[in-house]
Image 1 (cartoon, rainbow, N blue to C red):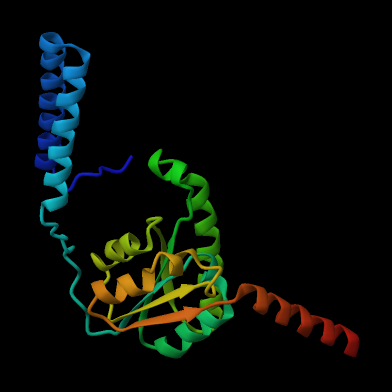
Image 2 (cartoon, helix red, strand yellow):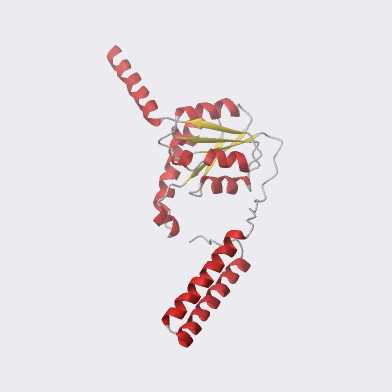
Length: 222
């Protein structure tokens, strides 16, 4: 399970607060009974909530890798990683010299996420990733890939620690069908990273219908 605390000191402080809270409730219960214990608990819980809400939040920025002389493109996509629109954009922007890293965040349910049981999601992401890399290789793009964290922003952070990208391409489903758009991943990424970010919308349903129509037309000609 992922650690919800930013540091060991923060986790230790949380443990101390919990111990002090329960100790105060226990003492109040012994001296004044159940209602006194409940009153002490509510007062202390409210005080902790007010403190946490008022504490200034500082977001720690990760240390990102330095950029190389060769232009580097970071591509982030999951189910849309095999979409023709995304491949065309990567081919267009990569040319023949850019280094391309494709990161495929693993899809997983919240229950599996908190239980650290991501194997099915990672396996499916790996299959999609390998298929996409094969398609890109067929179009002359030498790309490598890796399965990333279920959170696309965290996946980008992890990738940038070792891959000093010059630009980022993020692919999503169309509006209304995209979980990433609902979570404002594109907006958050543009606020967080001082890099050019291209958003590619991939409509897999439309692409599949177009391919089916093309194959049907070819069969009729035969």
